[in-house]
Image (cartoon, helix red, strand yellow):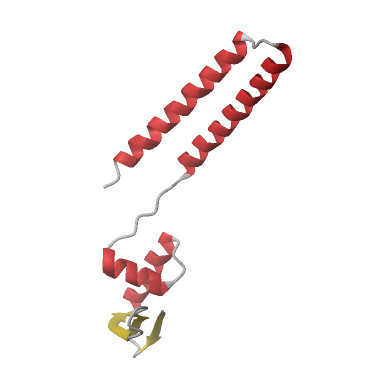
Length: 132
């Protein structure tokens, strides 16, 4: 896949978008003229999505019309809480196997951690349901 922007004149730039069809080995090109300002807007929008490849960005926008970028920091936090909870649970099981018992305080701490994880998951699901 090849995408290049090169100046046609002082006021316009020529956008060359071409890709090869994998199955037929045909080469198809689409040419679009854009102004310098439009080119800068395209590049700025591409950078805001985090996509580094202009060809991939142009194809995605031409075919789908939009790109959804998800902030997964909430999911990472839930995973972190689950890891902490799992580690604590493993320690309690180890202690129970060694001593033959487990403390009520340890059980309550696990319950609190589970409630915190559940609240985080609910918040993430609520935000995801608002995506349109």
